[in-house]
Image (cartoon, rainbow, N blue to C red; front, side, top):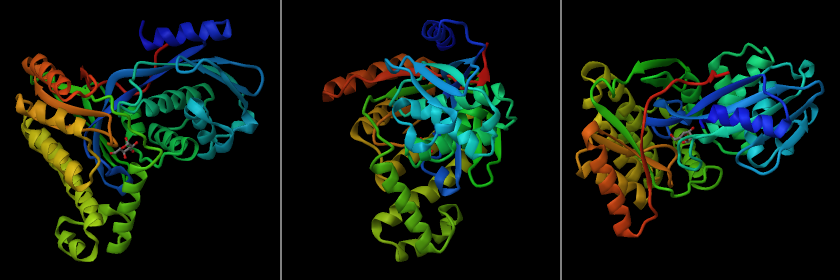
Length: 385
Ligand code: GLA
């Protein structure tokens, strides 16, 4: 049973009637461009083939109810009561989106309530943006059902606002953009300052390549700790350099940055500045030479995250090193860091070999068994039924 069927069944079971529609949105893998989104920089993620579906039914009153496969109970709230403080737990994602639509200009005073049921095949806590998948699916569903007419970049902002203000994670715009703008075989090259997005063919399948995800099962927690600390360092670095954001620091400015900043802040800044350049290099190389030539940028990105930004963990380093040692074209951790997943690009034939070697390497170290699977660049949010 896929997530769409599951959402329909779950809806019927909870609410005792059929939904009037089902919408879904994918998780994402970031090919390259990490911790650059909130620095007004560049990212290059793609939507994956694991999705979150939301089944929707209408109501005559002004109540929103949400139920899901994640939690035993349904949550209900009156549309008038929607506010960041009034929502918590997993329902912060779908209900936070309803609140954020109002914040970004939707007239929620004249809409009726809805019943929602959420079902997902995006692994939670794997750094594959299961939260953005919920937000994007709910945002598209409510936008269409309520006839709001928001475009997709605005719906991405809605999801980000829900994440920032209701869930409480100070994340950027990348995940929701990938989930809403992704296309089959396409990478979303996004300028996070102008929000100009260009979907670029990745051509993995045509060139006989596979993108392997290695979910280390190490928990990452964005809402707390490391992620917010990195963001704060970047903002401090930008302030000290006298620029609006690190997007405005050129490679040539790094010498001055080294003199101005303490060593740790300097290394945070150097990661962001060089990572922006690696995104541009990856996109150019992909266009000129195809996906088989982008490996060195992925490898360099990992080193920068490990040594300068310090967001990797031993499990991620092992996954990357093992994939590289067994012939991957390139490999890096993906997402916010402190756990989650690594990705490795390789020729199709190597998938069984790298999978086996990664499992063996983890077993040898006594690490928890990772989950290793191939993902395909897929279509973004859509209506399914
Ligand atoms: C998380 C955030 C994104 C982005 C990445 C790091 O996925 O949600 O906004 O900052 O981390 O690149």
